[in-house]
Image (cartoon, rainbow, N blue to C red):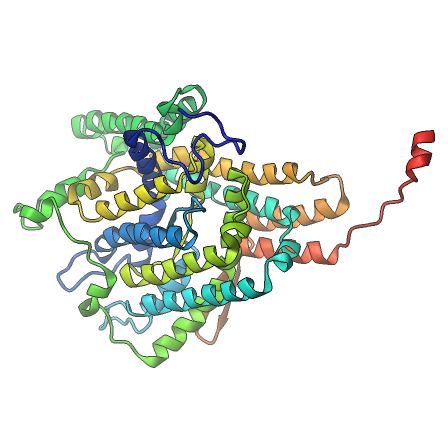
Length: 487
């Protein structure tokens, strides 16, 4: 397609692919990369809750969550002046406080979830981000660079990638949603291998969309096995692709045709679910503050780590231009918007960072196109139904590459900054981060009846910062240059 830029990109941040069709496929790739993780949040948080009409609340809020990802990312792009090719979608970091908040006041007799606490909590998170951004705007980021040097950021990024390895494997072998299954593993590996072949040997467009091709190949393979093994032979072990979302899209619970809604329907946003929620109380607002504000301080650290990662991928310092103040405001306000639309927080997605790195297409206009597709996806019922049939094992297969790429980016940062890993300080700082993060050293505690959790990634970053500050660089005994020359 285009020649490689100095930063290794084929299409840079401020550029657009020559072909609109090519741009569309590249945008689809970003949507597919984030989709499974994005919809997992509502599926977990609202599991077991139903609407007044008896509909599964988790399923109802899938479309709003996908639309929220597009809306939030568009705001982020505008806020960062289209200089940061990030895609934002629902955050796993807030799962615990979201589940707790939704369950406040729920009893055996009163089973309605406490939905209003979610947009309130996310508004608080957005406010924290904005306050920190204002401090950075007036105080600068030098203190931040000292706090988070490459020696800390590199291993933290490795933790972000390797910490997701368990999720990829669980999706690949089906244990995320059911029993261990070798057929699922085979289907996922087909997706992974085809992705690798396209990325390495593909020419022109094929090399730019390896994940679309890989996931497509894995899906077709899994669908064939499902049609033959499950629908043909009746063997449950071969049920890889669940086609029920497509059937349910066209047929009502009573067996009748859904009519126009089977083709076009509006997402049932959270702010439209008032009748499905418990009434709001001041005590609930206070509990929401205790739940969400501490976690927001942790996700700020993850935000910085993800932007350091993307900076390394595109060889541009995003913390300086467009600036950390702008990226934080973009992320924070996007989270507040998402809270009102679907209840979830928005966050930068490592999967999409990896897509930029592997495809070498950093165009923010491609990201914007992906946002439009995600928004439209929430309104077009058949497309939403088809995407919901993509099995987790296919995403798990390509995630082996995606998450590994993230971890490799951390190694690349250490190499680019010529970090001496033979140095005692470097070994201790990196070791504390890697073992705490990959080992899963999360910190859980309660204040009163409210539980809090600091993720393993955040704990690893904090430990790395502490170790880096208390272990001072030793002054090496160096001989004068003249003596060295004499030798």
